[in-house]
Image (cartoon, rainbow, N blue to C red; front, top):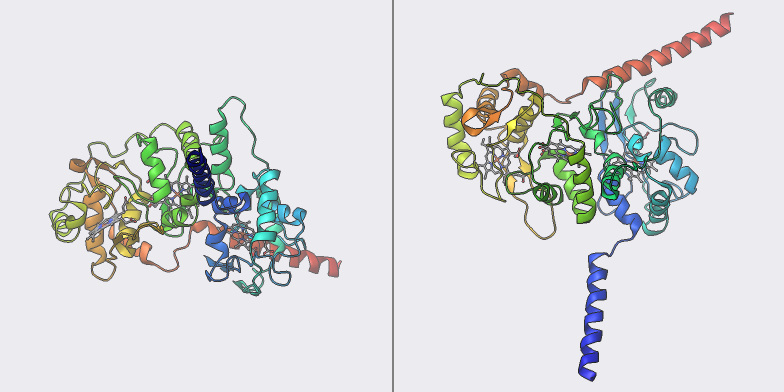
Length: 431
Ligand code: HEC
Ligand code: HEC
Ligand code: HEC
């Protein structure tokens, strides 16, 4: 009997332990991972949420601010209402509008319960760090914030997530996460010339239909093709699966955010994404392939085939395959060239070493990069039906800073509003 009891309490202890270690974080902390707040708001890992990265834009660099509960430099003085207003409307307690570099357009969907959990996490679990905010490097008059207020009023309409009664609970959970905290659309949705995301729900065919993130292209999530759900889960969670591996910003999304998510939440996102697929575009190249250049293939065999295989077949779960990609856009081809220029690293996880893809920017000429890219992306024998690049595309990719055209329109808009107001002021003084 005693033995049985010990066994019983041992199992009990074991199960509490596993629950504790499998789920050591509070709901608020979990949600902060889903929202990837750390990626932007932390520059120095020793000062979590003490302020973060500079986000480059043609009007200058915008720095993510200190959102630790420090009362002087952080958001320690925020009430819950202040927090919810910043998160949903992009407005500070003093009325200043935030730049849309903070994804409040997506976070507007977060429900009250989750918003409270996030607020409690930032107020009570995050340690205050006394780091002053860095001043944005934006010249007068572009640093004036009131044009942003006008932009926000014109182009954003914050709305909580609308539950779709005709769909399953998983679908709704996935939609809530993808549209809201996960802010996948920040990168994957194309932007209009006023820099507004063209669609915040699946009702718009532009929602998640592929967007530009600096010089990377975030491909359409509505043309995912035949990919198996479990393989997609592996890709989101680990940054790699049998055939593919993430690179660039998406690798960071996995490292900071997605690897912390439960399988249930990831699967809900996949269920949602699978349901909102659009018909594949008709292949615009069809049989009209350019013959892969012998020189490009020779370079590929010399430099790449040891890892990626002589037929682009890769090495399962270790080196991604470069064949069987099917239809591809110009953005997809640009990403291939970019991986060659910058290299790539598997998403970081504590339990394994990252795999590296070396960078070739200093070893290959633009022409060579073009040729290798083209034997990969436009290669019938490999079942790749993509858009070949020209040498000038590689120059564009290497140009610093790479600026999406929309930013100029926004800068132009801000200047126009400032000029208008100056004119109005003069007119009032003279009349
Ligand atoms: C893509 C980058 C990015 C992500 C992700 C992000 N933020 Fe921000 N956030 C910013 C930037 C940039 C600013 C400052 C904008 C400005 O100066 O107008 C900001 C400002 C804020 C502010 C206003 C503070 C102030 O007065 O400056 C709060 C609150 C905030 N973020 C909370 C969060 C939370 C909570 C999350 C995660 C759920 C999050 N942010 C995720 C970029 C980001
Ligand atoms: C910071 C920008 C950014 C955010 C936020 C982001 N992505 Fe991505 N994503 C990218 C880029 C860039 C790529 C292309 C690079 C690559 O595939 O390695 C990509 C690729 C992908 C791919 C592979 C698509 C394909 O056809 O190859 C999937 C799937 C994906 N993202 C899902 C998501 C989901 C789901 C979210 C939201 C939870 C998300 N992404 C949020 C930038 C982003
Ligand atoms: C030392 C081994 C190695 C060599 C050599 C190598 N790669 Fe890679 N490559 C990798 C690994 C590993 C990854 C996955 C990196 C990651 O996990 O993000 C990768 C990723 C890539 C990707 C992105 C994967 C995707 O699904 O889009 C492309 C494109 C690529 N390599 C092309 C090339 C080309 C072209 C060459 C030759 C110029 C080359 N690689 C040489 C190991 C290698």
